[in-house]
Amino acid sequence: MNIIIYTRVSTAEQKESGLSLRNQYEQLVGYCQRNGHNIVKSYEEDCSGKNFERPQFKEMLQYIKSNKKGIDLILVTKWDRFGRTHVGSLNMLEKLMAWDVSVLAIEQPLDLKIPASTAILAFYLAIPEVENKMIGQRTKQALRRGNREGQWMSSAPYGYKNARNKLKQSILEPDEHAPFVIEAFHRVAEDVEPIGQIRDDLRKKGMKIVKQTFYNMLRNVVYIGQIKIKEWENEPFEIVQGIHIPLVSEELFYKVELVLSGRARNLHQPKAKNENLPLRGGLLRCTQCGGNLTGSGSRSRSGDKHYYYHCRKKCKERLRADKTHEIVTNYLSKIKIDEKLVGVFKEIMEETLNTKEISQENTLKRLEFEKKSLLKKIADAQDKVIDGVIDAEAFNQATTRYKTEIARVDNDIESISKIDSMQYYIDGAINILKNLDKFFENGGYEEKRALIGSTFPNKIEIAKNKCRTTSFNLVLDLFRNIDKGLGKVEKEKATLSDGLSLMAPLLGLEPRTL
Image (cartoon, rainbow, N blue to C red):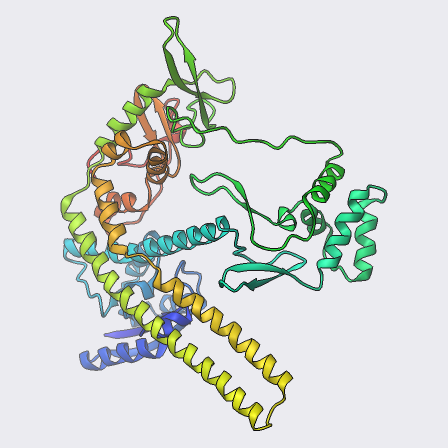
């Protein structure tokens, strides 16, 4: 067979875990030699696999298109080297198959003529995407957790520099630009000069920031020692006290706020959560205007209090909360997962877990070795001072740099060591998938919101005592699409047939067995 070898790596960590370009190439060449295949071309990529907009992959496609009859197979080590998205990879495979070109992963070989292999292939292609999302979510959670502890977890704003305290917490320290920030706040608070004039004067002194950045700086609570945490998923927006040194006082900051606004302003206070209305605030959609439903309670003539979801606008959408929860529970009870697919899913994920654990072990070994090398450099620098090779100033500069690198390595080691077992998440997720209705019915306010928000990313609607949605989350959607195999994954268009037509779900999204 005429073979094209394709290798890909995206990060230094992968290079250290047996996935280097050279390692992949040697495996693929050995496979071709053992099986008598002819290597026509080889392409190597140092690029993310999140999409197929990769320079070398695009060049490979162009070559195949120009030599359709001369290429039989693209060879990769694993399916995640080919692509890390489920839908995109299936579509690309279909395109290649139309050119009579197959793809083979030598460490995960599949005969796609066998129906069961199609299901396994879908899992192989979806695993990297699920893993990327899980890693991204854990990273986001870790950053938000650090913010709640008062740490600054991103690039330093103007007037500060990133640093670490004795507890190795991420903090901000004033830098050489801090005096400009302090002067700006004081002069704006006096309200005797145009703000543009103040900025121009400071620019002449060396404050090199643009107009919008200057205004954003004057409204940033980081300068009074606070940290904003943006709204994310079901977590609300909040402001916490940071552990860094403020550059200005709160009194000065709010004087500036009054000058910028021209009047006193009342900050919006979020409403307290209502245990009887867990679906309000972005989880229910109005069938008439498409907006979010809110909720409130009212008393009947008998004195009993009932709760309703209703539209924020003048639409007549009004749903009894208890009846709505009953409809949602009934809807979730009809979502069934094929037990055979669950078994295949667990088996493949366990294989992935083993690979991931090996990768983590290799990364920890590399970091430990890197730390020892840095400590040796400090010891060598001390010897050079004793021998008179370098002076004290050079020694201090070198050791400061080495100690900074050691702190970074220690932080990486701590982060990797704290990674939770994915097996725990897999078992928990499968248990929830099998019992969506029970978890919703018996869950509290936060549990109900988390379950509905993660199960239905595009919200739900209630009409005619039925529940509708436009899409499930990735894992449920994967089970739903598993029988499509390598067929093209298309988005079905809604038809204008009734009030819910624009929200019509894809095939399988109304209650049915998956």
